[in-house]
Image (cartoon, rainbow, N blue to C red; front, side, top):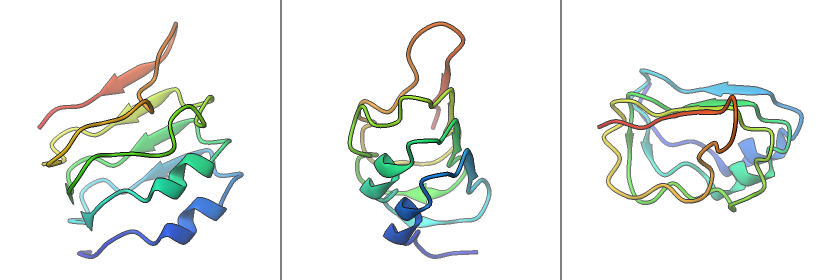
Length: 93
């Protein structure tokens, strides 16, 4: 399913889990993902995202798992990575 993710996904503020794994998406993860205040798990792995992954740092306070394995990302990850006890972040290329 090639293509990019629409910024309107950032309006789904009650979403708890979001996965785009194995879909050949490209472009960037919308910065509006920082509005997903209920998001607990984000799995953008195995896609073709470009640029830095920036989601308005610090707004994903409930994020427990961030899995972006084999995502072939051509940039950096900002402050969305999970921190603290019981949190998990996986980032490999």
